[in-house]
Image (cartoon, rainbow over all chains, first blue to last red; front, side):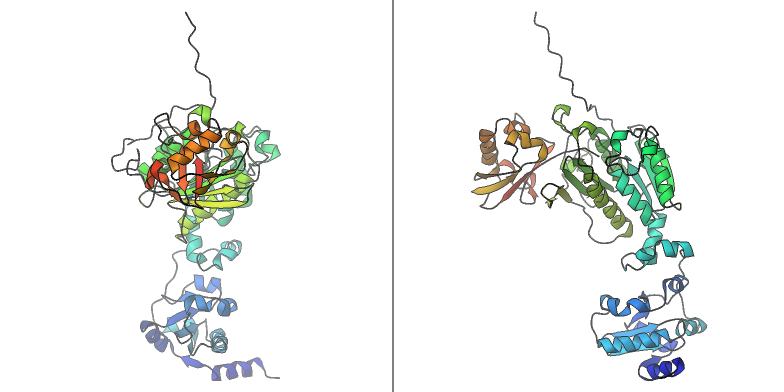
Length: 393
Length: 91
């Protein structure tokens, strides 16, 4: 049985150790520098250009950063011990040019080499709350900070806005605005999970804000208890980075689309009907807008789009979470967003389909010669009233 | 050409309740005429009186909008899927 000291000595004897100066040279010639410390240590400062893989995940994730086993890999920790064990583990995986920095990050700092210190690290509480995000390479601390700094507007706190709002708040989106002019009705509770039985009769904005604050008190919730129209839409959307369209009527959909195109803000679109849903991302400059897809709304007599149309209660959950996912991807700059793609979901058939949506050069708002240059209210009523028939003479 | 036509919920009552129909047609225009011949009222829901596709309905052949193909003259091949996707606004 060996003591820990003997074990460390034997591990160090079996690997290649280099100085901070040699690590710096190795990085300059293209070596992958890996910080194997824990997230809180990484957050307080690190070697510029280093990648972060905590020791516990090293074997699982090293291939993402160094696929070629003959690649030069430099490992460091705080003092050179954890990185020595890490170097042995990589050697066992077949990496042939691995070294560990003697004295680790401490020696690097002592030598006066540059370090990166994030402007504001996450607090200890945030580290815990978002720990499962911090473990994801595409998010990490940098991504989490982006989410905390982000401002997302939910247009509608109904079926789609509910799941989107809950998950965006849970994910740590720092500022969530909610636009809605309705009060909670008991018939909403079958799908609008931001609201509870106790909030029937209260404004949806207040009910939604209370639920979001209970879930994540860190989120700044801004309520806009109004109906969007041409006179207020630019002021309301102005401060936000991304708009989640969860509204339930065509006039608001077109108004939000046009205002977003005019102010170059991305809209994460969703719509539902009975067992069917649609989702897309309309990102001005990068892809088409809602009008490119549907240039005009249907006449009200052909539009089963109103709250009386009926919907499977869980369907907005599915579509609203596609919207939440796309919103997070936009904020993080991760993956391939649903730009230029319409995704449809048929719950009865359990099938997703995807269609290409192209920018329409003739589009009234984002085309080459737009005719809509400021927000306009759409004359449209949900309630179809047959035109009066002229009395015969 | 034998193609599958996907019917959205809101038009299914006009298509005898079917979610999918199998039809023979050489191009999209002929397909819509065939749909209309089989199911009264369906053609009028898809096309303006002028014969253009209504602006709140999209018709896709496989993944592509026929506006960016050859519109009503878009040729169909055996096994193609034609999807009718209407604007919906539930939230």
